[in-house]
Length: 366
Image (cartoon, rainbow, N blue to C red; front, side, top):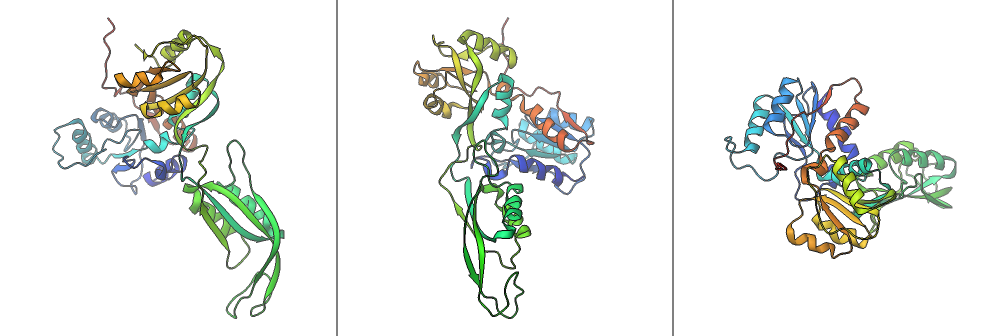
């Protein structure tokens, strides 16, 4: 199996087009054409993780955080980034980062946090714009169902919690092929009238290539007429943060206790607890201060994230509890998420989870 096969699968789950403009997800070292000997899943691709991958015969490290984030002007081992890159290159270790693109899908990093807390009725906190498109095509009535099925199989037709969504209206299409054509219906050189279905489906923009391939493969016409338009609508499964509900209301102190136990926290920094029970919980793995206003607008009782600054805690404004559980702590289960995804797909292949705790932050609780 080649590293390219693993990358293709991961990018079907978290397309690179969904990463933020500042990000650097993707293959950072190594060659996609290499045969993969094993995969090491980690949050960070530090030198210790590279050493562990080497010791366990893995030549691919799949990490959440890109070890190369900004530009490298020199590579001489003066810091942890350069040391890890040198170690990886010297030993033919490929490093693949799956970062904000995994943050921006509903079943990604934040979905894993929600799983741990048992949240239900989930939705994206800040849906991403410009991520939906619509396809219009025209199909002979008898072949409409096979084309519709192909579009659904390619990833079209999902609206929120509904799948296989489409719209069709019957009409009459006309065409006349020249002498070089071999039309599905009618004769070359003669105008033909065909009862057709105008078929409409929406799809995530990143699925466009697959949707068009599915359309062309299933459509009976020699030349397929279709239009693709970009929608202003947001995609309910794509964007930053997540909000959901607890199965039942909890007192604020009990929810803090659940956070502490679930994420194995030595400490939680939080704003003052409210009198009302906790029902709606917003969360964002990593640094989520940019979503405080979104969480408030969505009616969250708690907002769970990391990397909050002093003045940002005031933004809760007595209407919501902000709980800073730490950057690493909020994302730690991403390692489990990556390993589970890869093991489900590559059932006979070595997919390991790092035993190295890469958190650079320590707490003195003595």
